Length: 197
Image 1 (cartoon, helix red, strand yellow):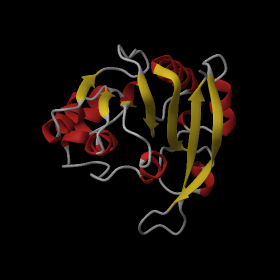
Image 2: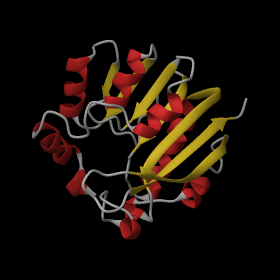
Image 3: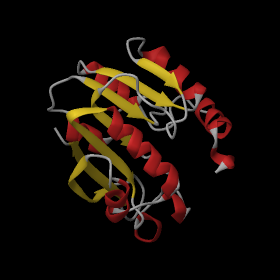
Image 4: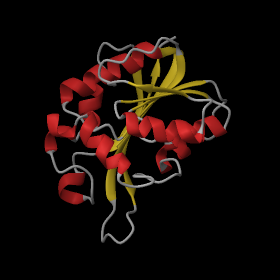
């Protein structure tokens, strides 16, 4: 994992104007567009495409990433967001939130469990977790994404990680994401969970 620490991502984010594009992730937009704005926590936000979109809808957003280059790029596009340079595996939100978003955070199981616990702790009663990731099946049956099976995960993995978090799994499944120029789609994992009242 040391090869993919902050310096690796700083270099990658510095190399081009946007790594992931400016539009929000399709699943984030699909799942959150109709919700009443409140407080949102975007963990591993990268350059902030989802945070910026939520901000445009009236959400109060805290966006966290360990790449200072990515955070600086996001901050240059919107100063109203609380941009935080921090490791999401240890970050604890000082403010309760209505939505916790984790989008394509591909880390090994122990780190993943820690992030989910911190996200759950940050949520108000009735708050919602939305997780989007490259599914384990994407390695053999999909397109793109990390090629290390240790950082890919499935519905069962997330269900196990949520044990003891006071989050109830609402839905977890595979969704197919078209990839320009690819013969087959990417296979993503889409998870929704809610914190008990």
